[in-house]
Length: 388
Image 1 (tube, one colour):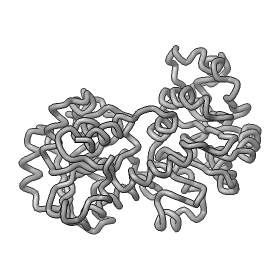
Image 2 (cartoon, rainbow, N blue to C red; image 1 turned 45 degrees about the vertical axis):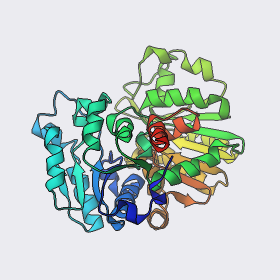
Image 3 (tube, rainbow, N blue to C red; image 1 turned 45 degrees about the horizontal axis):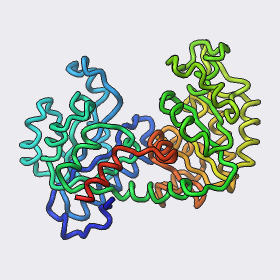
Image 4 (cartoon, rainbow, N blue to C red; image 1 turned 90 degrees about the vertical axis):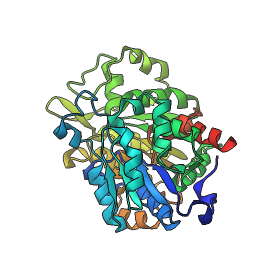
């Protein structure tokens, strides 16, 4: 794989970069968002190389049947985050939100700005369907492609896997740091290895548990993952977040030797919102004995003060630990920074390493898939492009 850091300024000066970023970030998370900080650095790097930048990105999973509704579409638009990025970079931008993507090439060509954002690509079925022709159209908007969105490299979408077939393609600076850092945990990690999983996206986390199972010693479960495993044991979870896919019915019994489930919870309106004090104590003890820790997904609804205790306790334990820690996923890194007193100082110095032993990954699912030795389509596309 080739990285943009290896390319001389003279090679890209005056050319148009198609920069893939993951801007799937809620406004409430902007303040402590590593993903946003890294996106800004990626844009700034290319602008300083005097390249023109066309940003490709997405937000959420909008219902394609409803995107013609202006109010519905606004809730998934990238315009507000484009404004925030423009403000932080102190540079103006153009925004292409035409739903006839055949007009995009003309609009990009006519723009006098050095920074252009395309609207949420997930508004188009061609993006989700990994359309080759859509990828070719996107490729026609620029001279070269930079993927600095490691967090989505496990997905098969046109902007991730198709564009590199048509233009020179590179991994971004953030991608390069991410992959080099993850190798530290991928190759001979110190044991015991503890995997912590929580939050939503339960189906992704379940697959990761299955893939990483031989490589870890303990799997601490919270959030929707724990709720789902309890649900299929016919234990009470009320109206909590649960993945009811029947393929998970026997999941706990297949992997129970290493899985550690909560023993108490905090509830609200008939739903589980956090792990309880006994579980915090149990999980903390395992973290104390760990030499390597991988964490993706908060333990509860940490944004609400009454349900932040579980996630906050794990953050404090990790800060005291000498274990090498990889913390991944936008929500998890956001929570980690929120509950770390020196977060703002650390993010300004290095948006990847909080400390020498604590690496903050931009990817949740992508990070865990990579560590479980699965091939990520986005990385494969970059590797294939570099061979041509």
